[in-house]
Length: 117
Image (tube, rainbow, N blue to C red; front, side, top):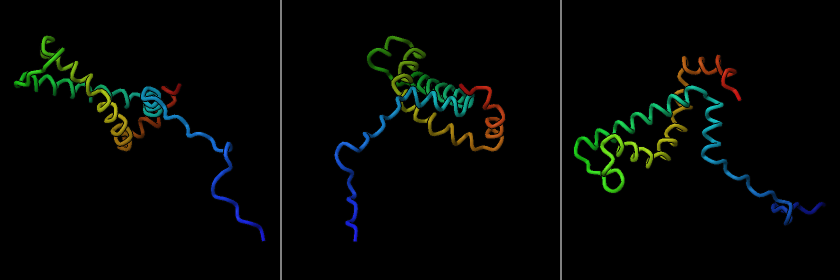
């Protein structure tokens, strides 16, 4: 009867876990996968966020710090840059969901060769 093999690998034979790709590398991969859809979703979310911050500032929100002297649009831009990680997270989540819509999916499948790097 053979002895059972241990569940743990001998020291020195394990490979370290792969490093998580950077945010920019993940965004580039998203661009290769979804092309103009990812760009459109990115700019659409950016536009909604900046207009939302502008409307909030015009409605009476008083920014403190750097944005206070920049005017409404400048303060809205600075605030939108402050929430950039959240915006990119929304792009990473929403782009594949939008790509599941049948006409959008057909467009991506039909034109994917045009933006492959």
